Image (cartoon, rainbow, N blue to C red; front, side, top):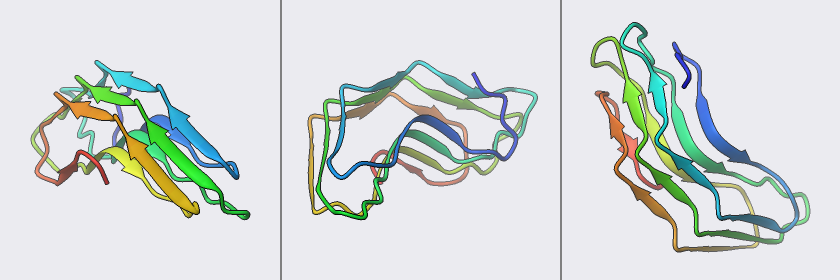
Length: 114
């Protein structure tokens, strides 16, 4: 996959809609970076951050982030938000999501769910 230097990686990105429905998505078995790159950019496996003018419900369910790996030329920095939920909906319904088996050779924090 991406041989990134200091850029962000988004597996799947969702950012809009009065009623944001984010479900049945999968980001699996990706290799991010390489042995010849610093690969210090932030990783978002799944990013759900709807900014709504008219606030409605946000439903986030049955998504999977699994088996992804960050490779770096040397152990260095590189934040990981494997499953990011943000935004400003009226209510959040979040359930049945799986985040497992992700590997990052990094000295910076790795968040399963943020």
